[in-house]
Length: 349
Length: 288
Image: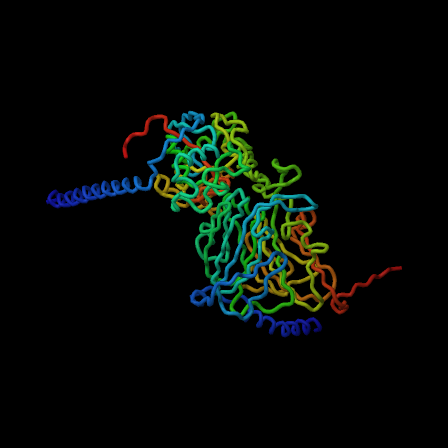
């Protein structure tokens, strides 16, 4: 009886939530309407951010013309425990800058390849409808700049990456990021938003510079990474870099997987995802423990923080978390809620 | 009855053929006049003392195509090293139209000889024996012309690139591609002088360790004018599309060269892009 009542109650309680989500989520397919939306005004430079930050929500604004400036570079950075690795990047970070637009926006991508680069680079945005996702149009030799414009017609969370051959090497070195295309009116408001991207890294000692690691092709072909990391660095979401929230706040994580090879089983230890935008698309799932994020794919997860403490973010293929670095933390501060979680130590005599 | 019906078709065909031949001839003539106008054939011959190496050529499996498609590379001569800063300075000294301040805009983008402080002086920090960079395909072609040579064809360049220090074709060796990539990933190597590393099997230096090099038909991989086109129409170089038409998908070094070449335009000048010259072993027929 009690259980039955509880179930009934929770269903009734969740109903409005579902309705709100359905109304404001991505449930908007690409159609001629999106194509017909007029992007108004003069082009503006879009706000873009490095992980784990995300730009401000689009809110209620109408469609406009945006300029996104990206620079490709090949530069040394720390991969783990003060070990340097030669990363290839968008805007000097792994993952590259988070791009946030809305359906109907006309986005001009300016891709500059650093003069100090050795190789050509380009960008394939999964949010682009067009050949190669822009890769052909943006193929850029060192020191040059290319440009193309596209209209965002499908809402969702999309991966972008470099698609210059050999592609697994460009992605394996860190050339990926996320672009969010919000539906008209924006996503429902939440209290906190963060940007997390997983990647698998295959390393060997560089012959060029002692002590530096670089990409290992054999390990990549064997899909046997040395590191599986959130945001391109072991500990990027640990210690002082932990992401934060307060009790009572809703958290939205934009989680991407650059790959190049592994599928992520994304899980937050001690939390249940109230909402998951499966694969970053329009299907909303609820009460999810672990969500699959394919290589070259993404997901949006949302949950309310009820109980204070440290919540561990992992790829639940756990050897990756325990041994290869796929681990981060969310620190939730605030008052304890013994109704939901009550830690008692019972000493038996 | 039947024969009578066929005759008019033949007749029509004949007229068509003769017409198109005339048309072709006219177009060729037009092209010739055009190229005479634009081609700098007032070039002053530039004496260049670089050793040329004889490459016997042979059947070769290009990076693009299938195992059954072999390309014949005819014997040719290749410069043992890239064209240097000092040689290019000599060229522009003798040929003022190719100087920094004079070059026609259609022949080069804005970074031609970028670091040269003036028309006839090398950058103070530049090694005169380092390969010249920031040169367009047009400028490279003009230089070759002035030296009585030409740019190597892509297939010729790649034929030489198959070799390591001890064998003419090292492509199947396990670390062939990795060893090249190790050289490719070194930054600022274009500032080093030529011929400091060991030559390859043929006696050719610096195929990989200094610069990217122009070839005459650098972007031909995107054209579909060869016999393989019908079979391999997907020659796009984005994402994994290329892997379907490459013969050697683990040859990452070759992928990098093709990525570079297909990103180029003939007027581009790039910090780590130079060239070397080639020559036919037999006199060029005066067909044009």
